[in-house]
Length: 131
Ligand SMILES: [Zn+2]
Image (cartoon, rainbow, N blue to C red; front, side, top):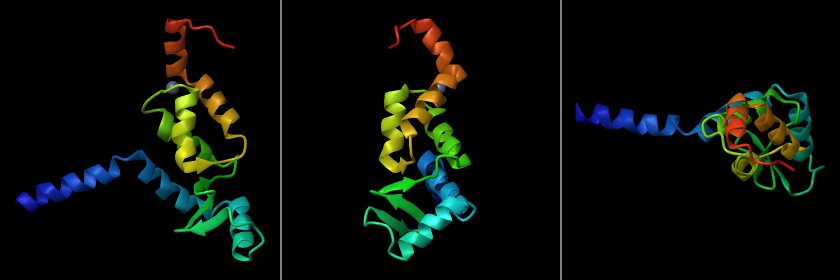
């Protein structure tokens, strides 16, 4: 009976990591994105430089998972990383940049945080000047 409890705990630990869930979702969606499919083909044909790697069913650029900017995955990653912490643009950016890359990601992250209703409420309380 003890074994059951231990196993369940182990599983919970794995599932509760947002990055793990995000990677799984990205794997599933790479197949549905024509842009990523095209990139994958180019990598496999040796048309891209060595910064690009297709590994473990994921597309990497300089060791970070590459997403196309218009992909719904961008929002999925943003909400997965930001919505649990509601950190500012810089911290959200650092966390996402550790594992992911997409073109103009700074703008996307800025817009996402600016549009976040929870962050807007927090900002109104702080009344910090913005540049
Ligand atoms: Zn927020």
